[in-house]
Length: 323
Image (cartoon, rainbow, N blue to C red; front, top):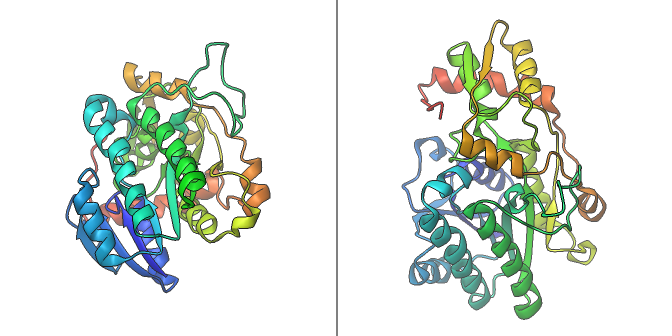
């Protein structure tokens, strides 16, 4: 199958490209930035693409003629609050441009990556725990606002134009790759700095609890949803879940693999506020029922797999900033 990925230079793209190539697909990856060194081994073609440029998006689609599109291009929550206009342009206008190219290019299927950032505290009280697919959405960030719009646009293009739009609401994602400025990045840096320095001062409270997922499960979810039988899907956008640990529970898991690592907690006001607005856990019953979604990794399983990967990453000279 001919597949095009937008925003392929980010955290998800790194693993998604490899999985698609391994499955025998013809993959074209696009991003505004050049192909990162970490992606060089993944294979497939690479095009520079600014998704806010409608003509450039159209031209790439005409050249590649994809049958399936994974739309990953986005400015994440923390960075989006530093530059809301950029987040709007990339996440809102970019999604519109890609959907228009799918419509005009008669793309068979469009996969949208949404986020728990679409949720926020409703006026009537806290979110249900776990939070189901269908609740009123009150995002507190520009990232969340634009992801709500992307979900609605996907549903609109599905019903109005017949584009087979499908999507997942990702929890915070963790992998041995550079994160992209999300508010859940504290979770990854608990691993990276434990290995690198033996300690980490988290920008979140010890009792912070949000849904998290290990990247291999996240990529598998995208692949499974993209290939699922359309007749069995009852909705466009699905919650998917894995585990929801407190920050201090992540610390305890890391300490099993990195004995002696120490953790302190100095909450950042802005990022802590974003984290507190998100669900503590997600109800993903619809995904489990409709397309058989089930995570393979729990917290300790992720820790056992991730720590050796981070050690290798650091040995190869990869440098990550703690914030």
